[in-house]
Image (cartoon, rainbow, N blue to C red; front, side, top):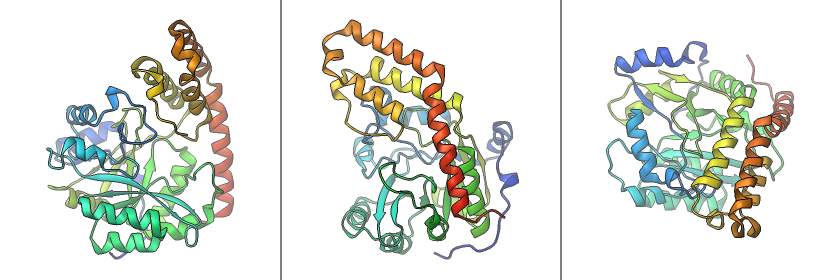
Length: 334
């Protein structure tokens, strides 16, 4: 798959919901290409997040193409079936390549079959070879996206200087709602410099998808994605803010304490946002399981702490410092 080299100007491609509504009336298709279900390790096991419920929600929202991109698993499609109306097979795969990349990348892949998924998983988990992984995707003509290029696993050393080189391997880059504006602007700059497509996604882990999305023409998903690759698309973007993060934290509290059947069902995982991880650890404590009244008080206390905005502010401050360091290490601005 040839990589574009012409520079693109995306300033007019970032549009407001009102403009998007006009395009949808004209027949443009809409999709949020990064959504997680209970099949992901970092999603709480609650009914609202079950693939069936999220699929029905996506239909009600009017999504033209519906995909679930759980971490390294196709379990959602085993639950839903592979031939539902508007449903596109998708997965978010992690590839750790210490030699070429130097860190882990998250890659969204679409329209594969079961055999292709397991072959890709073998490359990612056994070979740890990004170039072989990309060659497989190109050979099988599978649509794929470089997710949140300036995100790094919190327990590994960041390697931002490699990102521009890695971005050249991808046809499309992701503008992620859960990233700071500074990071998303760097992603846009990468796309412009290397002639890459751009998509806007929610990367939803709490069911709040469709708040940002991508618009393109296409009577089928292949045509839709081909237009994104060519830059013939629009995105409705949003960035991580203090207010958005507070809303997200309150949604997590609601899911943890109100909608989880019991906290012992919550999977053990780390989100990388310390305040969220702390809430999950607290909710899984034996003491709270034994005393429902204490559970309620803890929930109210966490709501109060979240609404002060302090946990959100601390996280955003750390992310802004990281964004500044990234800008120092790379030169992609026009």
